[in-house]
Length: 319
Image 1 (cartoon, rainbow, N blue to C red):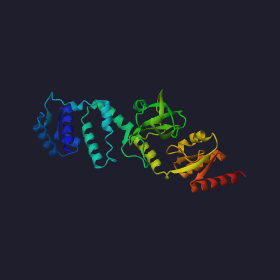
Image 2 (image 1 turned 180 degrees about the horizontal axis):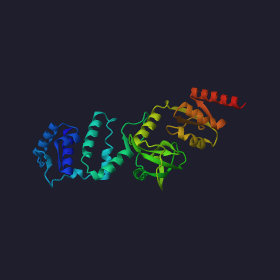
Image 3 (image 1 turned 180 degrees about the vertical axis):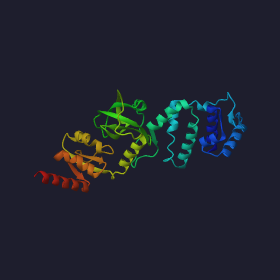
Image 4 (image 1 turned 90 degrees about the vertical axis):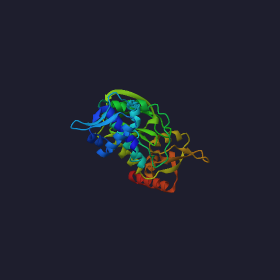
């Protein structure tokens, strides 16, 4: 992609005024011969750039020449960083990532600490989960959480779990924010354990005025990869049909919400039955056993058999 390299060359010279050919080549990841050809192309296009020979020579941009491309705002810079997900984007993603790296190389030194902070606190993945994703829409809490991760501050969030659960306050120490397939997640430690929180379910953010205290010194990407892989490597989800006692359905759905991968759905033919999409059969058995006779598993048969087996073990233990 020669066009992005020419632009990066121009921005580098605009920032530094004069650079040696080897320095330009190293910054742009090309050969000095390529640098010479690019300088000639810029000059032919009317850009006042030329090469000076000698010990103190180099590639020089005529003083006073400016281009508006470098006038990137902080928000635009974050947007550029969001394009560097080349690993998941195939050849096009790798090309975009390379172009962005070259553009960022031209940013003045004074702004580079902010860029480094943005790299530590934001990760973007373009591909979705192993199950279908849902669009995040506008997340009112996103701006507040972005300020929190930039300030490295502990915050309290009023978080609503999935499946219509009741929102509650949680104190979290942010690692950063992740965008996955258009959905934003806050990665933070809660009670000393790294977790992910869907930003669209954060109803309110309260500032504590104290620095974040995470349980380890890992960066955002390392923690995110661990959480992501743990979820995607989990056993296949299973939808369990449960008969719930009168007036208890809302309570059951609220308690099991953390173990679900989607919203509960009522049975169209049986008003006392609800279908619950659990992460795995073991998760379903573990939480539903606690309801005793209030919640009866009707299917699938293997989950009902597992419930019976676990229940028999409990009876034998306490008999």
